[in-house]
Length: 578
Image (tube, rainbow, N blue to C red; front, side, top):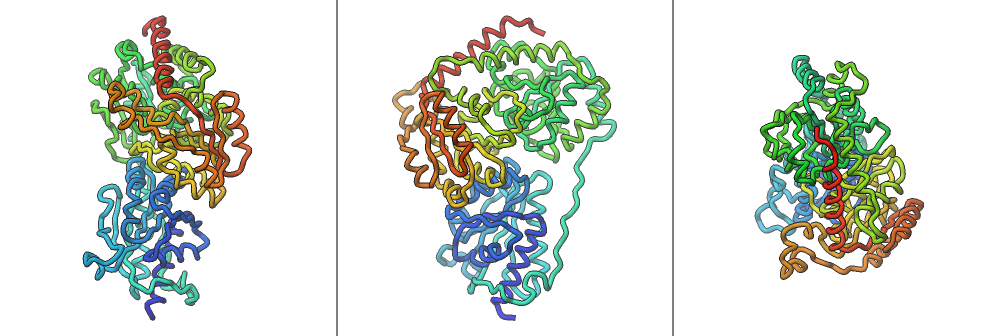
């Protein structure tokens, strides 16, 4: 067997096994050394291939696609710094538990560390940010079963336990072009490897009884749900809360604020409530059961740290992990969250309990909501831009939120809605890089998608718009343009005017209309509420890239929020304490 036939069989069995193990999408960046992989994926119709010339944007696109589909997506690039450009997305995938199978082509061993062109050390190059690394053997006769096993393991390692990225490095010799006319190329020489079977961990009967007694008792308890992606958890959590009379503090990424499930116990304005020093002092829960990652809200973090000694704190996570950044004493419950809730609420007989503790939280939430939604003049502001956006968004769609101020405005102003809206964000590493590409990856999964982000985040990933142009991906992007980094206006750096604008405010002054038109999109720049609402409605009627640019003022934004928080704090003082 000549080398080209050996290479062809090796690559086809590798790609076929990836598909057999569940890979449906691959994102490819062009390059020479990755030719065998790229051509084989292109030839194989069971895997949809996407091509993006910018590796950084490509990796974030794959991240968004995997996040939306909740299954592993493959990435392919050539050797050298191409692989290094994947790094930011791999870090985000690791911390946000998104499965990626990263396939980097490499020079063969004899060309490593000898000054060969486009050759860097790719062994373990992503360090502990990947769950598993394997340097694949060079294509040789007799290795078809081996290469299938590594492909199967790559997908399994990526999707099992706490999901995340894996890295397979593929050294390849020339010639690099496979021959797809070889007889029996895809199915002779090695059997497909079946997927392994996993059972989800559950609590024992004795452990369940402890939580039944806790939730059925008269202690002041809270259920907290931070960022999580299970669409079924909302119904389990709300039944548990209803039968125990416990409030649920629902992060905007909890998937609890939107949908048709029971929302009577959901407190979506807890961040605004806990902005008050007096509330953080007087509200003292006796236990908290948290699901999902740590909530976005900083006042919540400060609050539980303040009452650490008084709170029995539990974190429910599917698999063993220590995802608790507050530093408070915590007991981890490693169990499937949905099953955990079901086992407990099945033993709680009451249909809906209205405890005094719950009623107090509901009153605070209603009061805070009325203040947050109250209009203050006709000037555009980021907060009510979120309110009007949620009112305009299509049912059964995705809201992808940028970091810094947009996610905080969504936390404050996204109220409970019967619409089915999945809220996503890159909250693993919380960076502003790659947000456009990640949202486009989510849009590629098929649901109507809206991206809300700031002007700096939009600028940071404008290359990501290429796939929107090439594949006519329908997405509405709302760019909050306050000409710089708005979040820094809330920090102590803002008191240093000699340094602030250059180092932190960083105005960029770019005409985004030209950028959007370059990528074949529709651009609307708005400076009043009527134009904003109309632009959103029009964007949802279009098929392709639509950008709505909302012009606001950084200084007004700070004053707007402070007035809201102060008004809520004063109104809450009128309520009787529990």
